Image 1 (cartoon, rainbow, N blue to C red):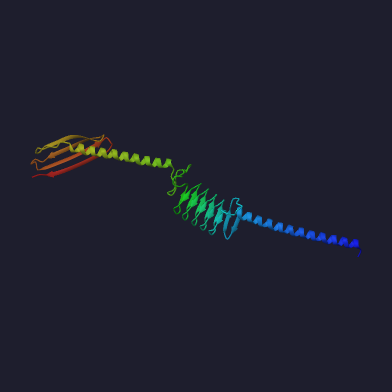
Image 2 (cartoon, one colour):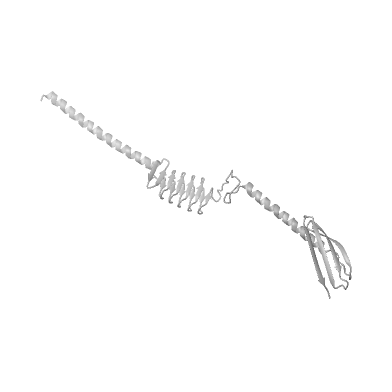
Length: 251
């Protein structure tokens, strides 16, 4: 082999070695990039395993990322966590601690079984309840339709109407009661006969706390003045009527 050809072969071998080294470096870079992508997915992307689904916001450190530790649980948001089975936590730092609980909103917490916490800072502490706030952080629920079924929520308009209806019924009952007492007073004040064999027709009036009544009565004594008979009736300003009667024997 000539010297020139040997030199060319050496150069070709050196070039091949350099190319192999570059390929190795490229493979290492590709591997590192793949690991970085995997890490980013774990820290800030979608993770689904064993029926648990988590989706967190960007977090290069991997800390406070979304955690779905409960069976069939779902979380979404930086620092969110679903500990209970079949639980859901949506929002940054949302926590669903109990089974079948749901927390929606920043810092929302569902602590009891079947509870739901709706909105930022809401806390649900009782089983199978929905909370839209917390102590000192209450909220109003607006645009609620009038209820139709027994288990429907009632709005203020419906509650006010119901309370006013009861109040009006109580006022009407009170008016009739006062009228009834006035009627009794009127009947009690009807004069009666006190002589044997006599008959008397009398009138009485009564008033009690603004209600008035008038009464008419008939009384009669037997000829020997031993038997006394009386009937009477009254009408009140409340629109009610009453009647009564009695008989007595004296000796």
